[in-house]
Image (tube, rainbow, N blue to C red; front, side, top):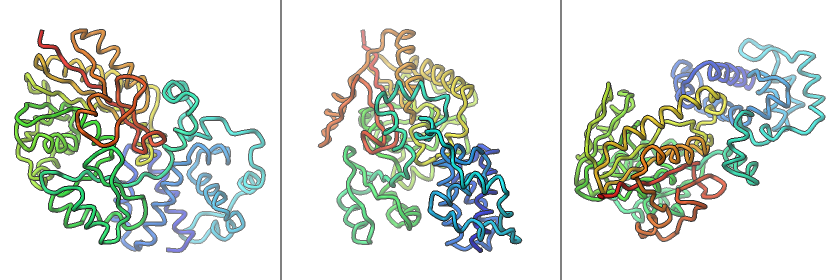
Length: 422
């Protein structure tokens, strides 16, 4: 493909992303399958351009005073120092974008004279500013800027199949810039870069030695303190990553009921469990009421805004609305109420989100506690010390908070409650 053709492909894909709920990586994969003529370098260049547009959507729109895909591509090239090449790239060729208009030329030459608003500098939807201010205070810009940077690849070594040092040694010997994660005793981190897609085809992955899971999610699973022989409910299991992590902590002894309303996502858990050497997970596609319990542990990894994973899924920024956030809050409250009646006396309830918004996190647990006052919050830092991890967690309250700026992980939140026996 020619450079102009690559740009037009990026424009077309970005326009599709604005009109669909499909994840960006999946849409890019489907585009590649439908355009077999695009070589590996073409696909990589187009994907890189699309993710750049997504990560810097608000600045690009402000800079060009337009939220169109074409305007975003133009200013992305300007940001790369290629303003002088715009005429050659927007050449009107058969597969390339049409020539720049007079208005576009003028906008490139005359950027806005006023200072960019804070939401533009921080690359987040403007309506979220009060919530993000609550979450981050004076670190708002540093935190949101960190959420706009490409994320590393984190692996969770499966202790049922291998130990971390062995996997680290092998990956390093193969040339991967791999190192241990700071907090999780099972985690391996590899900086973002080219060639990492091969990890999903690696013999170690196929043998169940590791799974892809951000370190923050690993920490949340460890805070649940799942023990061998317990009965566990994963109430919103999704693709089952937390269920697999809990099963490993339980040494594959006990029972885990993994539930979700999305049967397609849940269907992938059974082969993953087989690969990981896990036999204690039963999957349930929810058509009504979840299994009744009682359970020693109920884990609620609630559907949320995904604000904490903007590094990995920057398209979520442009899809979140106030109405959608209100819908998610209602779902979170409902799941917490369903979880509460399934915890046995003496059992634990874990609520987790990949969100950084207090409205989805602390506010939900405050409301939950008002409805279910018998539950008692457990201090996350103290629970973490019980795991024996070498690096401690600090928190301004009883909950676990994570963000790229503070912990170097995805944005994440978790709270652990216990239901007293009397």
